Length: 98
Image 1 (cartoon, rainbow, N blue to C red):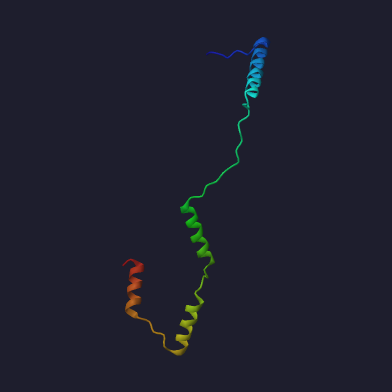
Image 2 (image 1 turned 60 degrees about the vertical axis):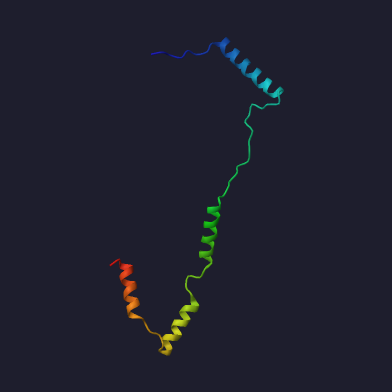
């Protein structure tokens, strides 16, 4: 098994001097040794905007259509509300997958 030898004092000094020279040259040439930092950026797709708008529209809509509920209450109270039994049966069969 091969081993990695430790740097001796002279090799360590040479490496430090080489690194310092590279940093100095980069600074003198207008280059920075530190990476250029850019601010974070987020881009939202058109699909995401559409979904957000739809979600907001649904959340802003009332959970109960009070106008329709009031119409039905009035029809029941007046005795004019009737149920189409064939339509009801058809919807039940469709919703149950029969």
